[in-house]
Amino acid sequence: MDWGTELWDQYDIIEKHTQSGLELVEKYVKFVKERTEIEQNYAKQLRNLSKKYNLKRSSKDEPECRFSSYQSFLDILNEMNDYAGQRELIAENMMMSICIDLTKYLQELKQERKTYLMEAKKAQQSLESTYKQLDSSKKRFEREWREAERAAQYAEKTDQDINATKADVEKAKQQAHMRAHVAEECKNDYAAQLQKYNKEQNQFYFSDMPLIFNKLQDLDERRVRKLAQGYILFSDTEKHVMPIIGKCLEGITKAGTNVNERNDSMVVIEQNKSGFERPGDVEFEDYSQGINRASSDSSLGTPKGPMDLLGKNKSKNFWLFSKRSKPTVTEDFTHLPPEQRRKRLQQKLDEICKELQKEVDQSEALGKMKDVYEKNPQMGDPASLASQISQTSQNIERLRGELNKYETWLAEAGGRGDTVRYKTQTFNNNGAHDGLSPDGAQSDESTPDPSQAIYAEFDDDFEDEELTAPIGKCTAMYNFPGASEGTISMQEGEVLAVVEEDKGDGWTRVRRSNGDEGYIPTSYVTICLNK
Image (cartoon, rainbow, N blue to C red; front, side):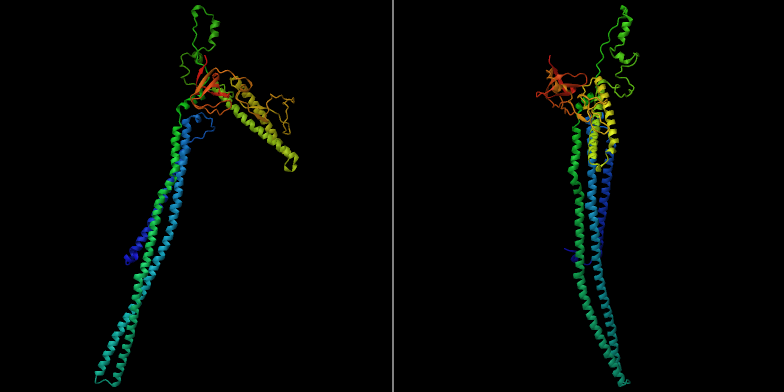
């Protein structure tokens, strides 16, 4: 069934229906645009939310960064940021595949519909013009036929009039004959116009208009089909990114399962263990036996228990639970407990070593560049590097001094000296390396040299001394990566030989069966010493 056959007389209905269909397309495009705006705003709010709570730390060594719960929260924020990106992608794809495409197609349909309606109006105007010609010829025929009848009646009346002359009779007959001839011509013209109109009307109703209506039907069906595709794309666009969104959600789930409360507790211990020994029992001082006052006074000067930590004011609460004022930060970290002080000094030493290595590399590069300039003057002036070489030398000397200073403090704090060692080497004014000490004397092999960064092991005794007999065994309770110098990795359940007990710094020295030695966190293992 088609419109041209079934709706041949419903031009106004077809015109209104096709217009309504195009308006539906416009309405759907507007709907999708508003949906994309919602998606974009949602994505923007998600990104702002992630940014708000994703506080960037100045250093990855911040205490919180080592907690699995903290790291998992950062992972969730990153996944939410990726999730927001997928919402933006949905909006972008909807705009491209639905809004822009449908809008372009809609303009084409409007132009095509306009063309068909113009053809219909043109055919209608042509038929109306033919009808006017038919009506005009019909009225002329009617008028001329009446005139011919009156002329014939007048001729007959004149012929019967006895008073009329022969000339009057003849004239009346000629007039009647002429009118009859004109009327016959009008009749023939009317018949021709009628035949022409009927033919055009038949062409109009059985060919021209049905063809136009069928074209409009095809246009409307294509419009509906395209709109249906837009409906499907509305869903498929989101389905396309669902796997990635699913991965984002899986990442959030994984972040939750990665939280390890036991490891977080171990991190708290590692970060905050002071290294202090618990206070011993307070000795009884029997004043009734005449104890020497001087001896008593001297004994009070040696901390025996928590009362010495409290100070002279014995009425205050025990220091462990009292609110303590924030200590003044010192360069050598003496304001920290022993264990934390050693860790901070070690961290500072590592930073200085990295900076010193950078300056050494810079110095070597400047020296090579100067040699090139001296051999090829056209490439540059060697004197132009003098200021940079001088500044680099000063930086190396400054960092060398800081390195020695912090190594001294670390030694005082009881550290093992597991830092990067350097052989220092002075630089002459030309930026060249020489093996002289600052006073001009030949330096020995033990003199540090900043031009070469020679990394030592965590403890040189590993190579120099004979293997120490184990003093016990330990079993790993957790995995430990052993990423830093001097440490050794271990897997949960692994059994290792204990070579050296924890000296209060939270580390135990162990050995594998293959001879590999290193330090591990004491809190990560259960230790059984030989009796």
